Every structure is written in C-alpha cells, then in structure tokens.
Amino acid sequence: MKSLYLFGECMVELQRVTASSLQQSFAGDVYNTGVYLKRTFSDINTHLVTAIGQDSFSQAMLQRFEDEKINTDMVFQSTDKIAGLYAIQTDSKGERSFTYWRNDSAAKQIMQFIGDAAISKISQADMVFFSGISLAVINEEDRDAFWLLIKQCKQAGVSIVFDPNYRARMWHSPDQAKAQFDIAFSVADVVLPGVDDFNQLYGISSVEDIIAFCQPYDINELVIKNGENGINYVINGQQQHFSITPVTNVVDTTSAGDSFNGVYLGARLTGADISTAIKLASQAAGFVIQHKGAIAPKIEFHQFIERQKLIMQ
Ligand SMILES: Nc1ncnc2c1ncn2[C@@H]1O[C@H](COP(=O)(O)OP(=O)(O)OP(=O)(O)O)[C@@H](O)[C@H]1O
Ligand SMILES: O=C(O)C(=O)C[C@H](O)[C@H](O)CO
Image (cartoon, rainbow, N blue to C red; front, side):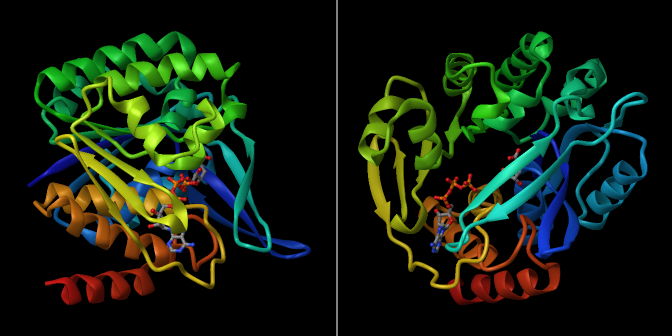
C-alpha cells in the first residue's frame, strides 16, 4: 500500500450562510488535499502530521479526520494550545479571501512532537507533502528541525512535494517567505504552484516566467495551476499545456488548488501518467469550486469522481 504524509494545519472553518448565521466546518490547505486524495484513492494510506488541542473543537476535528479515513497516528494533542480558526468571504465571482485567528494555534508546535519514532515512520513513506502555509505555520525556532527531517526523507528516497501557497499575513516579510521557499524548491521533487501565489510573492505572473524561475532547481515534475486558463507542466524538460473547460457557476474557489493537488498526487501514486492525473484533478477541482467551503459534500463528490474515473477508463 502506498503511503503519504501531509504536514500542515487544519482549522475550524466558518462560512456565511445568511446575514446572521455562519456554518462551521474544518479545513486547511494540506488537510483539504488529504481529504480529496483519500476520497478519490481510498487505498492510499494518508497521514496528516499536525497538532491540535484538547478542546471540544479539536476533539470534533479529530473525529472528522477519522470520518474522512485520514490516518491520525501523527495528530498530536497539545495540552496548552487550541486549534486555529478562519472565516471565508467570497465575492460575486466566487473568489475567496480569508480572515484568520491562528497566531497561537497548536499546529505551530508540531515539530516539538516529532521524535525519532515519527522520523523513522515518515522516512519510510512514498511521499511527503507540505505547502508554503505549512512552512509559515511551523514556529520559527523549529524550522531547522523540519528541514532536517525533510532532507532525511529525501535521502531515504521519499518523493518530496511542495505547493508554494503564499499567505502574506503569515510571514514577517516577503523576504522571510522567499528564504524558506528557496529551501523548499531546492529539496522538492514535485512542485505544484498556482500562478496567483507566484504573482503575490515574486511579482511573476506568466507561466513562462514561473518555468524560468524554477529551472535552476532540480525539480522532476512541475505542474502550474492557472485557474480557468488551464494547467502547464514540465517533466524531463518537456513542456505541455492542458486546457480546461471553465465552470460557469463558480461558488467558492477556496479549495480549487487543494482538491487539484490531492487528486493529482493520488493519481500519480497509483501509477497514472501526468496527463491522466491532470485531467482527473482538474475535473475534481471544477466540481469542488461549485460548492461552498473548502470541503464539498462527501457523497456528491464521491459519485462525481467515480463517474469521471469510469469515463476515463
Ligand atoms: N473557473 C474555473 N473553471 C474550471 N476549473 C477551474 C476554475 N478555476 C480553477 N479551476 C480548476 O482548479 C485548479 C486550481 O485552481 P487555481 O489555478 O486557482 O489553483 P491555486 O492557485 O493553486 O488555488 P488555491 O488558491 O486554492 O491555492 C485549476 O488548475 C483548474 O483545474
Ligand atoms: O489559508 C489557509 O491557511 C488555509 O489553509 C485555508 C484554506 O482552506 C486554504 O487556504 C485553501 O487553499
């Protein structure tokens, strides 16, 4: 059985239902990735590596991980911190923005829970995934320990996957983020950027310029997500464009990139070639953005993705 470890933070999620009511769920970029991966490829052991609290929201979050069949052996429970919180706002085109209450969340402590036993397990995986948000979350004084772990995994043959999701408010300065992202690009085998993130952090807004930026690094698989403009990928120096059919009813783009990542990585882990993986992943993302919140309803998603898998056989 293939196995994957996802490093990051899951938060309590709030989304508006009416002027005076909010719906509560759970989300966070790597968790979202894990959910869509596991829902699509149930045979892949999908472990979340995170810390939560012992409060009732954290308990309900843990239960949700289990309901989604996410492995929780690397979900640690802090005795003094609680889960972070965020709220989604969407504009008339479904484009999302977030408000966070997460500066002191339990997930920031994650590296303090990672001892030799955890390192040994993670370095036997097929894949490790983290994002720019995962890096921002880890306490600054613990980041060296994180990089040591990632380098050990790489040496052991684990495929290292990075999505440079950039949230400016989580960093002291853009330069601090750039320094961490530079280490990530240097160590990653697979990079899954969105054009928007590159634009916000580096002022780079074209696919060609992203490819040129990544060229000096030793990245095996570069898959660039560009919203309704489709996907570009570079593998073994060969570049290809993959166009998509834009969705007309975009409700909430919160988890577009995450659902794409989860389905893409799951497909690759189960042996699909890049264009098959991109096709299924972009269909999943197109479905997810027609629903509110980061996590689309389980049964509808399952029915949709199983139909797509059958059509593609
Ligand atoms: N309007 C749309 N119609 C159909 N599919 C879309 C649309 N917008 C996004 N997608 C799908 O979602 C994928 C990911 O979206 P996007 O390019 O915005 O990624 P991202 O920048 O990584 O996202 P995120 O902001 O979630 O991190 C796209 O590659 C595409 O397959
Ligand atoms: O912004 C974050 O940190 C989140 O993880 C919240 C959202 O679920 C995520 O950004 C979607 O990609």
